[in-house]
Image 1 (cartoon, rainbow, N blue to C red):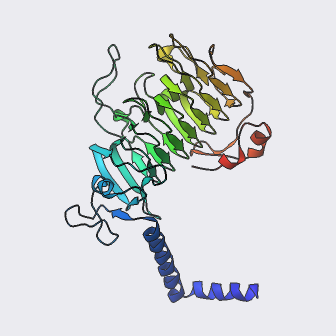
Image 2 (cartoon, rainbow, N blue to C red; image 1 turned 90 degrees about the vertical axis):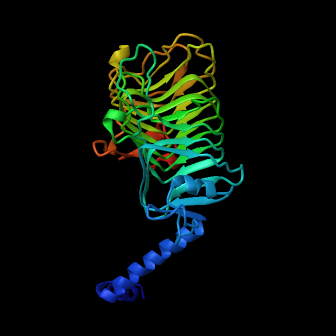
Length: 370
């Protein structure tokens, strides 16, 4: 019976009519999935003036789509590029604990946001988007810093309980590269989640531009991400006052150094746990005389209490583990090659993940591509 079904399937695929029917069925399935998942739509060919936010009559802009959403709804963006280096995307609407607001690409398509993204509302999820954070809105570096301007403001998270997941964030214009993701720049935020994203190709200013800059916030979780290509900063900088964050199961490759944690302003950074990450091929930060390290807490002031760095895999970092004095360090490995599938092509899946699982460095359910 199985062979008979297989033969019939091959006959159908061999005929033009059968192939057309199969393609039509695939399109119908995708449309049905989008209709079920998405309550509002926007498209690069839509209209904010005459659009109704439906699949047949979509809005044109991301802002109009955001304003149309109510708690519990998902807004979907059709394939194409929205915005430019001069565009500000302000996500103002808030969901609730049990009814989040989600903005994502239409299933089977890829929408790209280009510009300065600000998540101001709470209980907001951005999912399955390409985000080209190149923009020209950062115009003044701190005193004494000699770096080009303008450069890009980071994707800024200013609401509580916001999530970035399964996104691809980068800055495509080298001359505009700055910080990548900024959490709590405008004041403390709570319960931010950054998971299963690709975050890469940011930074150009000495040692000031980081892939993720965790400034203020409580209970931030950063896990399952691939972070690469930032020779001008850290994968994650925890400074000056994040508390109780958990940063785990991330791959970090070709970054100035893996992590920095500390405070020099009288605030407290405490209760943060950094564990089960891979930090490889750190390039160093010569502007601060730092070789390619995994972590350091070289800031003055009060470094806080209860911070730990443990069970991480550290490979080919010229500065080794790094210099730490106020962080509890234990269980880290400095000799095990993680054996990426294709590091040059930025595929950081592991050829032999069981080796790290046996070392208790990774949890099996996070060993998957973002």
